[in-house]
Length: 533
Image (cartoon, rainbow, N blue to C red; front, side):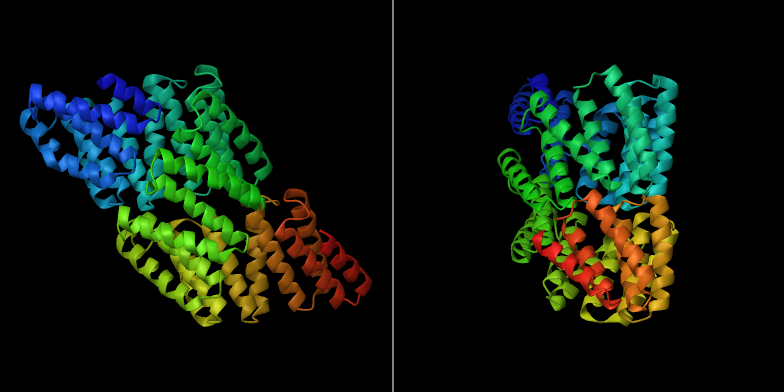
């Protein structure tokens, strides 16, 4: 029966796994007693299932009910592998609950004992290092996470060989660390290498191979290469539906990522249809309040916001926020992310006072929970500055965005996408303050760095180019504005298509430039073209 539960877990059938594990636990309690190692093992397995289902509080309560860690320490000893497994599982639960400090303390303790007892290169020690790297990632200490990921990878290469599945998993984890650091090209290279090995070792349709393909599609999306992201994303979804089934968590994750790609491409109707499908299946399989269900709902709200359907986005955003408060607690990082998203939507609706209050709360809680220099805290600073910008509070926006940019320069480095976002926003603040020279200098810097780091066709690069075009227009430097404006229209038409909202916006800007230059016929032709599209 225990093996059947394990099989269900591997298949992503957590509800079935829960039923079997509960039955096994009841039998083992009756036959073997509550403190028997097999009983305690079943408790740990059931708690892990609850964690996978997003029912973190139940996982914690179950662990505390029997105090599995303490019993195993008493019965088996502090350094017994089963004791350390329980401690490791508990640390993972804390990590999922957003209680990162507790996760870190417990994770470090397990790692130190395993190093002492088993040695640095033992598989269990390496697993603990990997778990601790995950905690560092959640805390926003990306550099430390990268160092740990590199160590684990090197040890696994030495002990297991380059093509061992665990080694390939470590390579994939390191690619994720590069993504968090904004080093997308390195992430792409590493994920391609892993994909090549996984296809050779495991086969093209193995779940791990398909999961890696999905991750590579996300990397393409991060790099603004949405056409490649769409093609690979579609392929993965089709294969996962055949191999894993339509309701498997991995299939739903890939469908969710494909919906995000559609949204990034401006194909909002397709994003909406696919997003709704994912939500419906996740509600059926995982429940309405599972974190994954709420993530999909949040993504759909963002799509509505991009479509200008702010009312619907607001309704969904409020539902998600309330559910996360109930399930995860008011100060969980995921709850605060939803709070920040809802604030942004209010800002787009022109409900600036509500947006300001909500974003201030998100900022305050993120400072308290994650620390002043955590990337999510810095995002809240930038979001609040953006709200101030929309409210016409330019001085407040300038002060806050400057501070965010300075900290990001230290924490994330100068070329990180989030740092560049703050530079871009600050240039926009200068533009609104009519400090056009400062806007031009900073805008030029952002354009050059984004071209180098992200590429000429990345959406963020194009946003910076479009902003710089407007700055030249305001400065009366029409020839430079025209050159840049044409470049933005050409690239956006190629990458997104002529009907994409951003392409149409750029065409409209170019028409204004022609009008300002006295080239009214060209302006009129362009305006007619926009109306036809």
